Image (cartoon, rainbow, N blue to C red; front, side, top):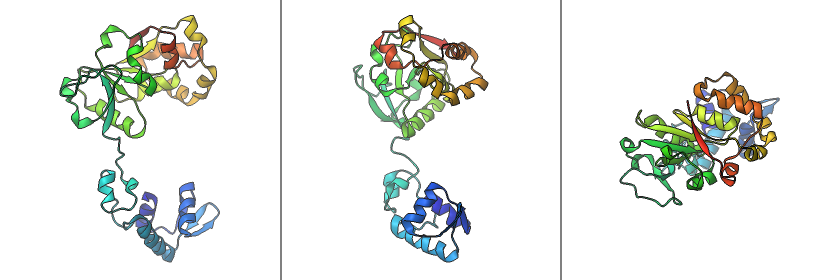
Length: 266
């Protein structure tokens, strides 16, 4: 919908025929394809505006809905046009939760709105890349200094955005540790977070190295290009080790082999 809104507001008579515009052309039977362009003369634009209004319940020439899906549903037929995703202002947490949130057993987690967290009480957080490793965090061989952390799932889409919002608003004194897979993508994830003080990595035993996946390492060539020019500071040794070993080691293997984990400060 945003594509149609922007195009009609610009009043341009042609647009590049991307997959999204090809779908719009097919659904509304509108415009004329010429090479890699979709032509929309004034009359076709008027028809497109009418058809879009009927399909979506809102005038595409007017400002688009803001807020969450409930707010968008007050006017639109498709509530998913709302810019705010359901998880966007939430995080998935476990471990040591700040009051007044409840004390949880190690196996339980909560999806909570950011507004429910008293940030001033949070002294230490641990961010975990994979959901099943987040679920099993209490089974890992963790350094004692992070045992009382607020544990956060990194997440995807809305949850990932909620995590990033939380990180930029935490007190500067709060210590942030990231626990990803031991591979290029995991190191890039840690480095690109708004804040991160330490990396949690395994001690590389012979058995753990034998579980490393070379194919996954090769597929992470984009992360390698990023890390080649990144300022890694104290994490540079990890990057050099990864380039030397040329494997990807997953969190699940670390747990299965009871690998000892250690902190590497940035």
